[in-house]
Every structure is written in C-alpha cells, then in structure tokens.
Length: 478
Image 1 (cartoon, rainbow, N blue to C red):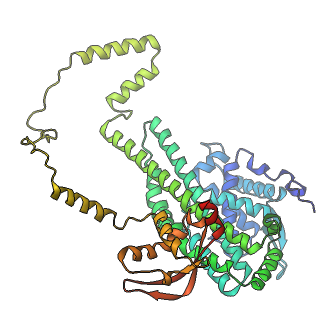
Image 2: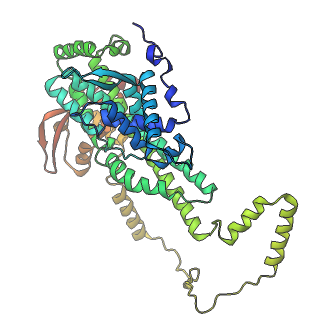
C-alpha cells in the first residue's frame, strides 16, 4: 500500500498557504471547515461553488485581511473580489483541498472537502484563538465508557475510554503550554510598557469561567480517580473466557494494539495504560497546571501593582525622560543626565500638609516588661494534651499499612473483618483503601470492591477485599 502523501493533486498541497494572501486562505479554510464539519455546519445544504465564494467574500469583509489581499488605500471593485475568490477556489481544487463531487440523489455538480483538506482545516480551526473552547468532559466520559464496558463487554466502549483518558493528559499539557505563552506575553508587554489587559480578560471571562473551572472541579482527574480505578479493577477481574473474547475483538477492531501489547492481554494492557494516564494527570499534570496558573496570576498582579504605583507611561515625565535617554547618543545622554542631576539636586523634601491624611503603621504600643517564663507541671501537661489532640488523627499511609499487616490471613482480609473497637482503629479502617492504593501500598496490596456494605457502631461503608502479595512482603522483611 502506497502511504506517500505528496502525490497526485497533493504534490503541492500547502502551496496556497505560502503566498502573500495566506492569512486569507487560512481564514477561508476555517470557514469551510465550520461549514462542513464544525458547530455551524448545515447538513441540509450541499457545498456548492456559490457557497464557497460567499465564504471568501465574508472573509474579505475583514479590513485586516482585505489589506493583505489588496493594496491598502485603493478602492476594490466587486468584479475584482469575484475574480480573486474564483482564483482562490481554483487553487484549492488544484492542490487537493477541495474536489468536484456529484450528488448521488439529484446528480447535481457540487464540491466536497478532501480528507486531507478536512483534517488540516480542523487544525487551523482549533488554533483560532478567537474561539472559546467547549467544556471538557473527558474524565467523566472515560468513567462512563468504562462502566458501559463493564456492563456490556462492548470493546468499542473500552477503546473510547482509552481515547478519553489520553485526551485528559493531552488537554492538561495544552493548558500548561497556554499559561507559559501567557507569561511570555506578559513579559513582552511589560518590556513595551504595557499591561496585557486583553489576554487577562480573555483568560478570566472566557477560558477560566467556562473551561478551567470545570476541568479543575467537575471534570477533575482527582475527583473521578477512585471510581475509575475501581472500574479498572472490576474489568481486570472479569472471567477469563470473557476477557479472551474481548481480547480477540479488540485486536480485530484496533490492529495497532498488536504491536503494543507484546503477547499480553489487550484488555489488561489498556487497563494498565489508562490507570497510568490517570495517575500522571493527578500526580504530575494537575500540580503543574495549578503552578503555571498561579505563576501567571501572580506575575500579572505584580505588573499591575507596579503600573498603578509607578506611572511609567510614554506621556508621564518619567516616561518622557526614559525615551529621551534611549533616543539620544552617548555624549548628549551624559549632558542630559547632568542636567537632571542639577535640577534634582536642588529639590527639597518636606512632609505633606494637613490636607493629606497618613496612616501611621510603624507606631507600636509600648508593652510592659514580659513576665518571667514559668515551666511547671500544669503547663507541661497542657502542652502534652495539645500535642496529643493535634496528632490524634494524623495518620500516614505507612502507619495504616503497618496496622493492616497483622490481620492478613492467607494473604487476604476484608474491611468488615478488621477490628473497630476504638476511634484509632475506626479511622484506620476508613483509610485502609486509600493506603492500599498509595504509591507504597501498590507494591504489595490490591484493593477490590465487593458488592456488600458493612456497618459498624461508628459508620457504614462499602466493603473492600485487600489482597497482599506475600512474596513482596517476604522480600521486604529480608
């Protein structure tokens, strides 16, 4: 099979985007994609020549693009616009972006975007910064697809869940890069003595409220992590006959898995990959996203505070002085600085008059002499009680795991079998599943959710079975 891309009509595929009017061509391709596949697509009307020309005319109505296509300052007739639109359409057809097509129903000649043209136009449409992206539901979609596969064993649901989980990490990385670009824009604007209001307003009003707030709360990887891990464990425990059937269907539906799994079970490989992607999103990408967002807001706040406290605009005295220093050659610059020193050297500092009201901040009330430090038995008991109250319910994963180990019989124990005779043991049972799924607990423990619910005098909760890998424990002891 020939996989070469630049053959036939596609030999000079990107030539329309290399001319001087490439911005107009890119805008037309974005408009065509929206018309064919985007949110503004109208599937009741075929893509005709007149419709493509209409899209070109709409793009030419933008003054910035019109100045790129035609010489600025001169009047352009409607005939010249039609000629240009027809020439641009001819280029797109000639180089493999658009093809002639006959409607099979009424046999009328129409147009259609080629597959390559549609894919590249989608990239141009997604890169358009003027569009607000839709809310992301990838974590929730991955969880629902996993639940559907666990119920129906439809391999398409498992492949969809894998696709959604991969998008979670990709979207978070895109967000991190977005904030890094915003910080670079802040630095560039600050060097030009400007404050990047437009980017900050777009971030607050469009991006944060409609996208990041959802991704950090409703679609947060941390919020759905536990349920996704439970579904993955449930899929791993499927009967072997069901799993083998799912493996065969997966290899038939997704042939690319054969080169990835290396003689392993395709179902188990997908489950492991999804768990690793969710862990990467929670442990790596989400902290990086919060850090970059915090850096951007802190940097903008600092620049805004500086701009409000120090008037360095081009019209201010300080701005004019800096401009003169920058424009003057070295000898005249020295003379200008000497003149400034002479003028400022005669300045006299005075306290402001009564018209201004100052708040005294550094005046402190004089305190009396401190009483001598007395350490007696009552103070020691009080300090010990405070320390004990603060540490009463501070449990680490290592402490919980150490408390679980003596209760394993034949390598297994369920939560309802653990003793709950005091508050410490009750809190240990509540934290048992989290400790088993921690980084240290994963080495030798596996938590599987059971269908029953157990109750104690203190709480009621879902029951889990903890299974220990005794070989890892023996190696750890030796």
